[in-house]
Image (tube, rainbow, N blue to C red; front, side, top):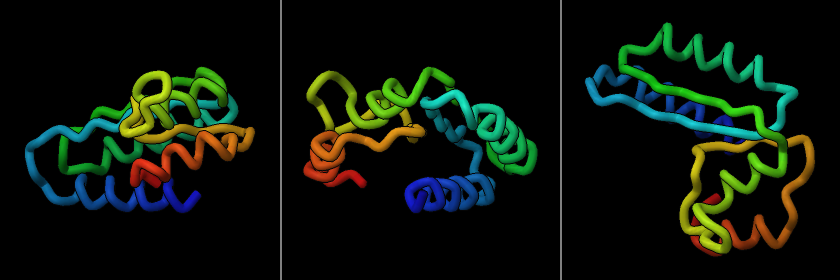
Length: 104
């Protein structure tokens, strides 16, 4: 939850800066909050001074965690998405692998 809050604050700061560069935020995960994410994304886009491209794919918790945690199988240095959501906890070894690369 703290990560989502930090990401939202960063996005707000970027959106309010007025620079012309497009901001891209992609997420994926559980289907339950998808309508909430889409509504919030529409609100950010409508109120931003910058061009925003925001997506959320409702593909399930496991896929959301995998896309957020690793770029490819076993490569935890980066991810495919800026955030992932889930209604199941991330396995401890997967979380540890993310932290070992300096990501939170």
